[in-house]
Image 1 (cartoon, chains in turn brown, green):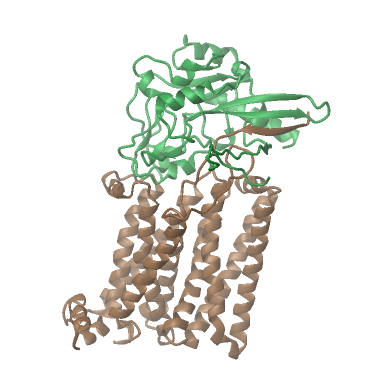
Image 2 (cartoon, rainbow over the protein chains, first blue to last red):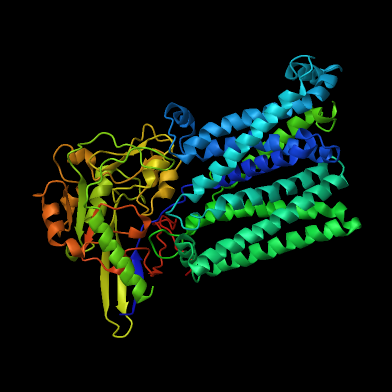
Length: 369
Length: 259
């Protein structure tokens, strides 16, 4: 029997996760990705990667500090955050994350502190309040052995794997939302995080360190490789849906069937992805073009952020039980636009405060030995 | 949805309804995202609901009485009756299909293990509840529920959901929705008691019972009698236009996109 069905009555289901969640996922992904970019220069002490490590370290610290603020704000009862620690729940991914996150933050800050300390100790010799503050922050003139930096760095790296796994798994286990319920989602979060982090490093490099060509080149290479891998992952995800290999992905496709907006989003994503990959390749090939890497940097940051917006916000507009799609209009207040602007404002403030107080452009500890 | 798929889903729905009758003992907590141990409530009982759709007239008395009993904020519902207009494409005949929705108090509730602070839990009698003194309002459970049975209560800023009116059941009263149902379509009871009305009806209609979204593996404990397979999962339907405004012209309702 063929029949046409009209849904006459259905209640409104609001958005449960606000743009704060997008901000957290964006900042924390840049944080762990930029941390990876510091590894060759800072942890392995490779000279030609030192400039990259300097910028990436600034990026990772600023994002690590601000990300958890956005996460806290996404709770409807933020003052109850201590409940996470009073009721340890090892079977919940979110609870596991609440344990990993503070340890990760402390290790990243310790890693950066040890890397910046020699330069801060030199700065402490000077005059003025910044010098005085540097003296306090560097906790004396004693020389921190290199193993401390290595331990903090390796610890932060180990915890960053935990952050990658938990942020991905937290979303990917939600069967109720087939668009999330795929093991490719955590992989995609990491890959687009690397794209965005490399993009942000290029932008900071352009704005704060005089457009170092080596940093641009290394970051563009990261973008090209991760974009190609992202394309591969997207292709695998799509093929799982088409072939029915994954019933969940198949369901995800069915939930977007005949929706022109989602089709437009898919086409847009494809075009921006191609544009970024090709422009990054072109900039690497043509010597004169590398100075304009910031264009690719902007695109890369855009892709990293928009991917999270689509995944976390727009997927919430796909109805679970009812017909059609919900309309999500971003609010002006703190659970909407102000939240987004506020988080970026806070990040900018953190970046500038570090820039004022820390001589981060000077040699890192890696090269002082 | 094509016919074969529809039939298959219907069969799964029936099978799952059957499987849910086998009482599962409390599942011990083990790996990540496994069900934690149940707490509170009467371990001798397992509450469930049977909704006889043949007797539902879509009057929304349950929606209203639940709203009043449980003081849900305007626009948020612990239960609702979805209504569909079904038109036969060849004859043009129309019929209305009513589908009361509420928390399914699943045997394998996906909302419970995700809770990071153990604020939402399943009682030993099967009822899934939220301790809103402990809830941090992370809304993870809202995302995890495949039935949209949860929402963030804008007054309490914590997760809210149907509790089968546990506060009424515990003192020997019926849930507000059951009490107010004019057709007697909602039957609640203890499925461990073979003489309860729900047990007798489930035995009688064993092969006709269906549950919602069986493919989610949640083993729901709200059973539907007189159900149409096409409505078991997200129905292939057109959304009606909705644009509810108050007397000042301010929008108080919502709109579906795509119209």
